[in-house]
Length: 495
Image (cartoon, rainbow, N blue to C red):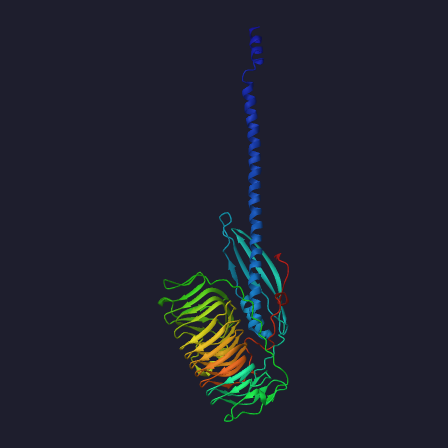
């Protein structure tokens, strides 16, 4: 009986049961928590992977869009600077052949995104159209994705812009010669009013004289001691339009670069104003933008364009006292958005071998963007430019021995050459300007002006440019087509 009682006592004793229940519940909750933690960790990991996977796609896509913006500028610049289909495609394919890397993105969760861009494809001659593929590989950490798009580039034959530069001087309104000023070659005007062509002193026109339709000798005001030919009527009034000034392209700055311990390129500006920078060679593998190119202390900057045409966009071409030489077989185009400063005996693209002068001049074209008020491009002393200049609205002053060899096109209202300045220009095309030669100023080539005066021993000697490919009036010149006519862009897709 006592054993049975003890057994019942243990069987019906429920003390400690609560503890067991609590332990069981804790175990169950722990299992649930571990399960939730595992699921959450897995989701976070999957989200991180998905984030990187999507991010690397967007980075690759951004690389394509960035490159397309560069290509658009390059194609417009190449179209402007070339005159044939072969030159056009050779220029852009040289640019396409250089791979590029973008690594300036913000860090993403400890990883620095990188994009590698290549362009493949080539034109099949003699086609005017070529298809290229832009391939952009985005990289974030260990993740990579590649996207691509096709572009179709088309050469549009240039329609031409006729320029009648068959005279030493052609003026829309008046020609006035005094002192011993001389025009050696034909001269003409559109005007039909009396005394529109005036000669006095010992001045002369050694060539045919052309006057407006229906006009005759009444246009001439010539004293009896000066002999001139009888005037010839023009068949029609000549009109002279300004060629389209190009859209300034957009380029990247050159990376910071040192010459010795000196920052020869800093924040994009080229600084040849330290002895360590003298004779620095700027190797142009791509077109660049520079806020300023500054040269001082009679130092020299060599620009190597290689074997293809290159371009520089610069706000201030500031040659206080120095020289720019062009190396390589390609041509250099400089777009100046603000101003050109030339001081002391500065030179650009100096001719070292007179026998190669014409070839040297053809290697440089300068565009100067319009400003308000209009600026003046001044060459004085022994300052010289060997190349061609298109000033959108700037005035031109060559004085005190300053020299220029090449073509000058300006929409400005005043062109003055005086004080022994020499312009072997081949052509001054200034249909809006009063062109004035004074005190020994000389021009070899032809002048097209709104009005023209010359005095004091000045001379214009005619040289024809009819067989030349004028830089700002290329064969088949005309207007620059719209961008969408030159390039078609297909959809971006993953490779």
